[in-house]
Image (tube, rainbow, N blue to C red; front, side, top):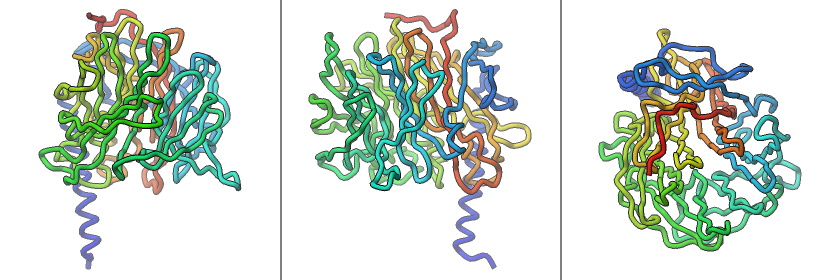
Length: 430
């Protein structure tokens, strides 16, 4: 006879399967003509790659691109959550990667704009040479100085003064016991290039349950530092960010602050171990340097998040993000995932979703009806930088190699080097 614990486990697995099916059906209603509807061979390991720009109901535009799996040489260890920065003084890229299980932070560098990469170097090791440091949110302040931090930033801060060669962890003072930060800090500089302010978007649980119609599991906050992170202002609870967790920030070409917000998942997806795969994506804007914020403009209600933004010289904003739910399943019942980008030509006020870009997409190896692990092939994180030649480099995590029956969730880190379409429909506007 099945015991109570087994019954509960069976029910939870059944609920998760139903939620995944709902997500797929719900997402397929808004599928563009060339959005992934039928499976293609996954792009990882291919020598040639193309990025596709959707064109409403017409055939998409294909753009030659380059794709590489930078974690491939690492003995197929787990590698995830990449953060990229470009350091112009050295003409060098630095990537933070979480490696192994449990995760520990390592760095790799590239002096040829991402074509080749150095060997891994651990952020910190113990006396026996074992890695022991974990940090997120890699932020470049300039002149060789970088910051990174544990997900709960009240537990410390990592600082490098030498372009990421060495790192030192320092204690911090805080008024709360939980302050979660995932995204890089917003760095404000004066005309001479000196850092005048750092802006941090953080969040913590409200105490409400996941899956409520109110979608208020999380509350996001804002605070600032005038001394490069040594001390911080009191936090500000942004009313418009109730139901927001991760916050990615950028200064638009007109001076507005734009926040790309990861939204708490809709109530129908708010149960189970992997509920956060169904988080949504919205945008909130401040016209007074963070004092007040607009209501959120929802770009995707569920399944798309982990955003990263860059500002182009012409004033357009490019945002990349993961697609964990929303693509239709294949005819034989497998989920599909991807990495997308969308462009704003009016300082974040609107986003050209009809002409968004698919940087990479792939079919999962675990059937939708297989239970909670059917999301293990999904992506995690995006980090995007603009290179000196005008090309765009986007790093992301992918679980594409997890097989049916996998017992351990393994990720890889991949890169796409790409450009916007030449005759883009999203032109900059004042």
